[in-house]
Length: 388
Ligand code: ATP
Ligand code: MG
Image (cartoon, rainbow, N blue to C red; front, top):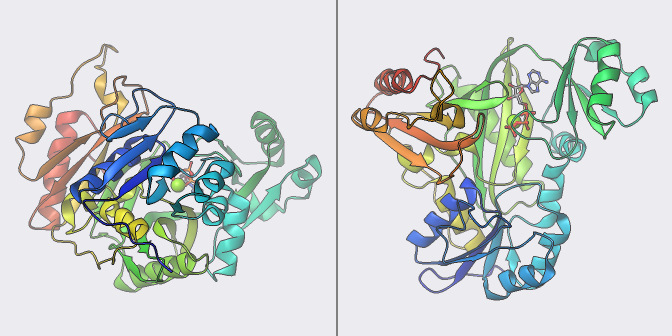
């Protein structure tokens, strides 16, 4: 039986108070839900906008009980939330996605096993949990990327290795934690697909987005994906739907893919939540990824989202807050917002640091070339890379 949380009456909660939690809270509030955030940071982006901020550790059982006790449903904004926390919440509230699905996404080894079980190919890889595993790795996996199985994000916990000697050194540099070694694939481009699935098994998907990463961090997302055939888009969507359905997923799920030089599709990884590559949905679609996250957890009907404008999303990292001399500056928002079709989203983080996600800029237009042109103008004003 599906629990129904009623707009205008019920309370929805989120564990984790970063920008994804903040945009979840804003979407929930626009439907009239009361919102509660659990996050240990007194100045967390989501805590600042929620009706209530429970400022406590994720493993504080009294805090977890206070959250679950008042919520019709609770979700998570990051996959590294301790499993015990979600289990505790589930005693008193609907938790979506469920702990079992989040557990798969927390561990690259479990995630790859799930991809295989769903019939979706990933990069050739080997598990590295001992020095013997390092020696036993097949030559075909080198050069490769060594990734810790747990706690990696934005390229952290990853080392690129060309030889067995570099692999041994790289594993030591990652403190010999359990890792996967993936073959370095010849990437033509990167895509992702955002799906939302309800407890009743209804699945809806946003159009495929094409992503550019710089230094392991997402930099630009474009929709419609300019370099992806309709057949490849359909294949990516079908694979993402199988991956979600085969773990009985409830909520918003992002699946990242690589397109190889030979145009074959390989799954990279997934995130059990809205994703940075889906931020374009806030301004280019008639429902956003956060709206669907709210609907899925609340037991409301999902609705097939419609892209109403071609869009380019530029990620705004903390680097933009420093001039060439390294002094703090305010990026030229007035000039950027003077361009047509610009939608600025800042997350309310007080301290800018290099590589820190501070906000994003969506640029919508009547045509894809126009969105691209305006995005390049905005990027030039901000001092971002303009070639993509
Ligand atoms: P995030 O959480 O930000 O998505 P992450 O830290 O989990 O990132 P991955 O998605 O595994 O990291 O990898 C980051 C980027 O590194 C990828 O988007 C891709 O550009 C590159 N990359 C990762 N694995 C491979 C591979 N096997 N072959 C080639 N490039 C790769
Ligand atoms: Mg990734």
